[in-house]
Image 1 (cartoon, rainbow, N blue to C red):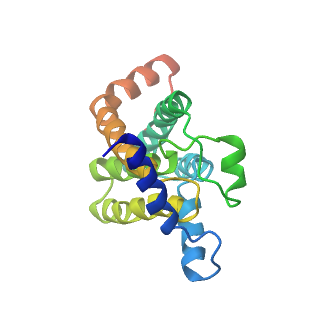
Image 2: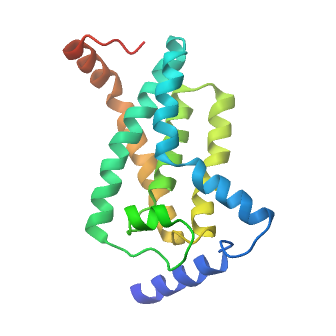
Length: 186
């Protein structure tokens, strides 16, 4: 199968999953999950939670915050290198206007990074919830017509890889930052 045929299959399957133009419960759920992975929701939420948390949760919130920030840089570098145009559509104007590129899905990458970090640092009940939530975010992005299936698969893989790499060196990074700034995270 040629690369062109793979892209055509990707577009056709993605289009079949689309519910953006179909009012109803499935569309409403897709909108909810599509937005639940927004960085503008997660970053301030983690900062706010940090101020009211004990040391156990502060660690998780801090690693998630810096993981999301680092991942955003990686995702943008790939997006502006590949420059794949988003699927045509009306829903998600804010995404279409601020980021016209679809590959890889930043929402899928972010959701899977959050779940992977949660597996290492959060209680098992939260890790399980995050692993149930992450694919729903990714699939909702296709359902709402702002990504292709291959975008979310690439995002999922990228998010997990960045999380695993980050989990390997975050203690040193946090210690260095605390030493340089005098700011203690937990």
